[in-house]
Length: 348
Image (cartoon, rainbow, N blue to C red; front, side):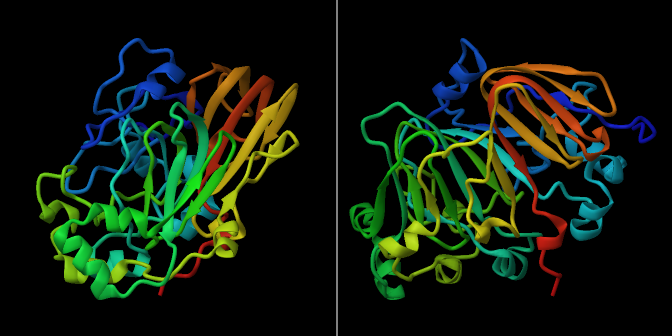
């Protein structure tokens, strides 16, 4: 590996590790591909993360054949910058996905950092956020948080009996439209309805506690990540999510303006997102980032490295070492970044 060559921005091809649920047609359409894998509902963009229990599945490959994970390890300052490296170590701090649900996802949740470290020997948990790009079904529904406080024993009974109807009925059903965003803290039970297409930002791990595993996963062991449901369900948020509480994490529409932050302040320690609706030109400060182009065309002109033309369906990784990058053109995109190092909590 050549760490002396400074990293620069580059286009990333589709990276769709096989999943247990159907979907992916909207990803193929966005990217202009004629092929849509039936079980390719997730495109892992700029991924230095593997599927749970896997050695390589999920990792992104750069144009020169190197894994992004290895390139970052070889030149962490060039890719991440000194401040992010000091705060997070050799870690991109972010996984971005294109996710198109061809069927409703099961009810599930994700552990927080403390649970992931103590119970799963993982570096972090999985807080996430959804930027809704498109819906291709009349049922434009996502599910988030219990409507009322739930007794842990009641929930454990639903899981033991695989009572899907009870689990789904207990959640808040939320109708979403393109431009909406949903912040999903770790522990909160959730599901995504069929036909919803999102750009997902998340902490860089693949940890899911699947409450509703029957007809989705081959067995319960995969659903509780091998630690048993009595232990796994300790990470679940059993509290009720009122309309007022939901309003703190669900943002309606992208709003007006060329650059908008669609996520609540609670997301700041985990990741950052911007809607970019550029009509002429915008400047991106030096930072590790991932850009997903949704419409239009533009040229990215980094301070260091060659210009890169992009258009609808382009996914781009931007290293800190590229310096200030000018977005020159007319384009709509989602720009994703890891947390500001100043917002990263100190390790315990």
